[in-house]
Length: 121
Image (tube, rainbow, N blue to C red; front, side, top):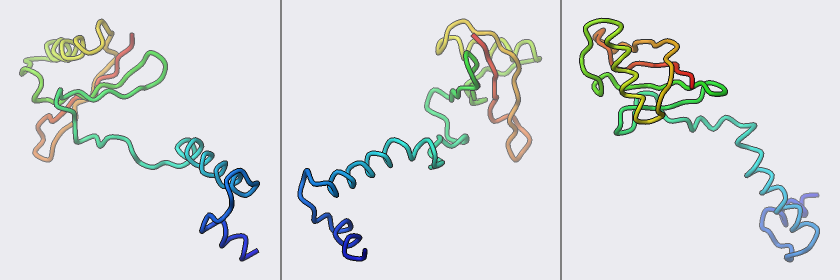
């Protein structure tokens, strides 16, 4: 048993042999199955937004969550003006959408740093 493990580890089998095919199959299975089973925590960090200031995440079929940097928006006087600004920031990216609701993300000093916006097409 130890000899077989050593030969697998050092890959000493000829190409086309049974053991070679087993190793290749295990490697391919890991490549294609592991991302579905193992959480590699490879999602983009929420605090690092792309240069456009908008991060898009799927929230189900025809539903998305947009995270918009507060500095990408013009100051709004009230909730209606803010919703209009949010829709204007989303429109160039995904066209006409309906905003379900939004959430203000606050920084340590209590000021708005970003907005999470739930939209439907």
